Length: 119
Image 1: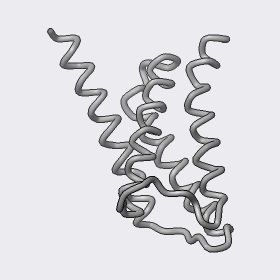
Image 2: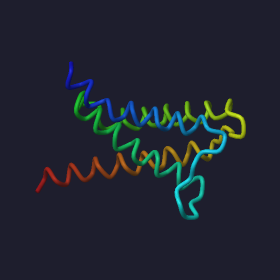
Image 3: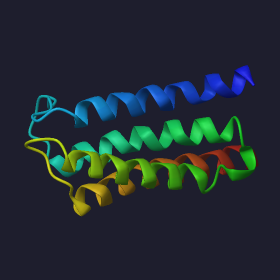
Image 4: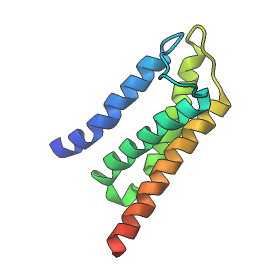
């Protein structure tokens, strides 16, 4: 039980960071000229990796789809949350960028692990 809790901790903490940043009317942006969609993609690319790690190390038989559904659900809840933050809005396109980022990371790690096992 303790190990299962530890593998979920990075995802829970990262979810808290995303929630905290989403709570800001004007969130900080990294240096450079990044679009909003690129930032969403990048943030949820990491979210997908952490979700895959957590699921794969606690419920391995669900590691193909559960990380995607967790990412989709959390991305949707994040967008809904932003609807209530002054200066922010709820955007379907931001949610699609979230899904894209998490999908690319989950797909990449799943294919990479299958390729690695065959060698």
